[in-house]
Length: 271
Picture (cartoon, rainbow, N blue to C red):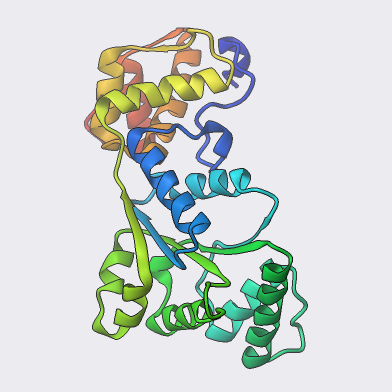
C-alpha cells in the first residue's frame, strides 16, 4: 500500500528470511564465517543458536546461496518427526528415493549417496533448523548419521540451528557424545543500537529507497527499546510505522508514528 508513495520497489520489512535483505552486522558476519568455516573444513558438526527472530534462518539461506555448485545440501525446517520420518525426510531432501525403505535401509541409501558424492569430488551438507525441538532420541539419530565416514574424512557436514534452549539441551549428560562432536559453535546476539539504525537503512536501500522514507533518531531509539535489537521485531515495527507514515502522508517517520505502530502491534502497550 505504501510502496508507491515512498517510491519503493518492494516491501523492505517483510519477516520472511530473504537473503537479499541480509544485513551483515559484526555478529552476523562472524556467524556466517563460523558456518562457512565449519562446512568447508569438514568439521562434522556446527552449532548456531540465537533468539527467535535473530536472523538464523536468513543466514542459513544466504549460506546455501553462496556455497559452490560442488556442494549438495538438504534443509530440514521442521524436525518434529519420528526417527524414521526424520531419516526419510533427510534422504528425500537429497533427492533419494526411499519410499519402500525402512530406517536401516534408508541410512544405507544415504551412505551410498555420500560415498558417490565423495567419489565425484562433491561435499554434502545437512542443515537442521529449530534444533531445540528435537528430542534426545532424534538428536542421537542425527549423531549416528555423523558416523558415516571414511578412514580420513566425514562424509556429511551437519549444521544444527536453534534457539538458546538448544544449548541447554546439548548439556544433557545423555547427549555428551553429540556435544563432544560439535567443534564449531556460535551464538547470534541481537543488533546493537547503532547496528539497528544501519539495518533499517540497509533494508530501505535494498528496496529502492533513496533517502525516503526517513526514520528519525528518536524513532530508531523507540524501535530499539521495543525490539531489543531482534531483527524480526524491528521489521514488524518498521512495517507498521511506514503504513502509519503513509496514512499521515509523511516521509519522516518520527517517535509518534512509531508509537502508533506499537499500539497497533500490541494493542495495550503504553506507547
